[in-house]
Image (cartoon, rainbow, N blue to C red; front, side):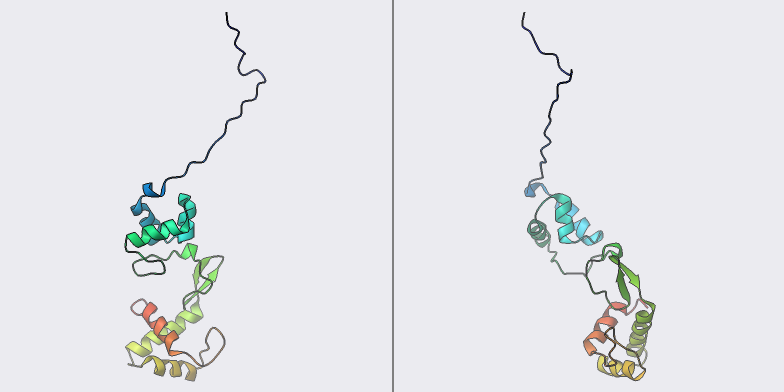
Length: 158
């Protein structure tokens, strides 16, 4: 008769848990697209979610024709805003986009001046300065590129 030791009586057993990550080839491109385009997660956040490198996520997005930095068709998640500077009309607080009433009024004026009154961007910039509106930096002189970006973002939305 063979003697077998008893199991479980004050005998410690160590079990190793080895983290196994997916092969990059097994990543579902559609799931990456959903995370990036619809949920608005950044490439580093998706890489962390799938336990792969950022470059791997970027390669998968490029293979689908999605370039990082493109915002057309991409939902920007206001609960997960990662840029230090918010678009005009918003402000960043604790990583979230919050509407800024003062700036929204300026954006509304820009859209009205261009659409209703037929002003150019440079003429709109001069008109804002004439009315006493200040930029975020506190300057009274407005740049026409800022006016263009405001108009492009807010036209049809305000």
